[in-house]
Length: 277
Image (cartoon, rainbow, N blue to C red; front, side, top):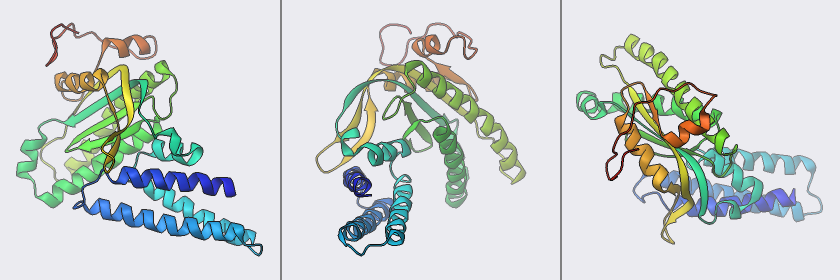
């Protein structure tokens, strides 16, 4: 119990640092900080119970259950894979930037800006919430690290803080994307039945390559993310994708060969590149 308490204390401290990345005016920032304060109070309570000679097993179980609930809530603000790594191995798991071979995924909704101009903000917010919830669940199923939402875009990477190996990560990323597209077919039927006139279509891009991954930012504000050529390439490939399709890089394709069928779309010059890929 004492060792678990120490690990959770390290996790809380690390999430506290990650929380600084949120804007002070963002309601989520205050919600997360309140959650961290509550976690720290429960952490101190657990430590006192451990030290007391009259601490009963029932009280320890109750305190541990409370801390588990807080850890689950933290995953709403910090990627679940990061929370898992923190609670299992301590803050050193994600305390520094490291070089990793990642498979990076980008997606966005086609024509979202036009749709946003025609929908009431409340309707749009509810739609995005349902969309992000569905896509996040699929991301978690395949073990991806949900980096961030950027407007209607989703950024996910595979290979840190947990990895299935370079090939396993690439296969998981592509299988995730295909399941997301299948889920979109179901959501379109549901949304049409609810009166949404404009169909939502998603395009996706995936690339594999070495990146630096970890906490980036200043001493006051940090964000757990990845930077590197594969990130930029995945973003560029996503813009090339037709609606309802997934475009992957040659490196990703080589890793999934024999596992998933693909079709070549030929060489193209990406924005910011001098040579075709």
